[in-house]
Image (cartoon, rainbow, N blue to C red; front, side, top):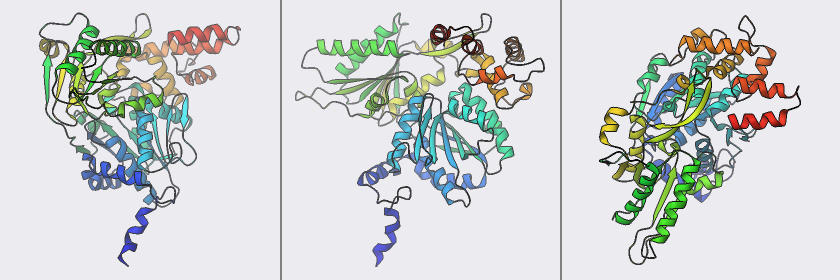
Length: 491
């Protein structure tokens, strides 16, 4: 009878068990994501091209759905089954997206869907879809330069232009020439994707519009002397005075600042008495334990009987800028700062400094307020500062890094001709020369510029070359404990 035709879909192909009711609940939500309208076009491009660029705004569903479609495509091919890798610049994103996708595919996290980040590998022999930090895929490439395990490699959040993503782009561009069976997809949340397109030899570009509502932007009339004070004040004001329901997202620069802000906001709301709406304050930064990270998806507290609105306040680093989508956010507070890596070549030191964000970042932050309905963004800086003082785009990390470790990694990947390595934004030749001299001086490279045994060992450490050498040498001098402490403090 007619009922038979729908039967095969009820069995999960990965577990051979019937799908759980939760699977169908989630499926309804998935089918509403903007990206679903493009599934056929995506599959068509995937079949016909080896590499392409996909632009989708934050929240379009690209990070969760596209890798699953790639898995479907890989399963439809004859021959040995290769996996799908999807890189993320941030650990939190790799973990929380993997958890979500495991739920969507109705499998256990760590089985068919897994993640791999530094110090933690949650995958198995069964894993066909692996979310990982870009740094981890780079490490895999050091041991397997052609990345034979994978049939599709997705570089997600490529607009963040992290060091590892930039190197991977150069490496994969070469691997694609050697492996006709490999597909490479570069995914970005920003619209300057033309640059990626040109870089990958004018490959196709697929654009998926997000669903964004208008966001009203407010600036401060005068520059704020203390942005933390101003931010806390603004949170309280919005919570007290806004008649609209809706959650808040406040961007700060790091763990200490975030913990401090959470404490103070809670204290101030408690002091306002029982008439005020309930507030749930949730911190978000990369070193937070995973079960804490999942709290950002909790619903806000309910309304009180007197009608006071309950709100969720997420206090986050720029991880919530494009990596994670938090539903329900209607108000964004943007003090305009982030921690960025800067390198001072004169004293050869890399450090994290709190610096002003770029216009592109500011626009991304404001956009977080318009996900579910029209929102408001409170920028704690003047309109003049936005127009005249902020850079247009964040500088690629490779242009503000100590190239010593980059050169070591590239040599370890078997790339010897660094001068002609195809960087998207090539570092200054002088900086490259300096890095080569330093590595030669540290005996990581010999006089011909080839990797020495020591150099090969140094490349295994995710450290500055000087620190890596120091850690290795500490064994000969019986001071490993002390040197490890010093290294941890310096890195």
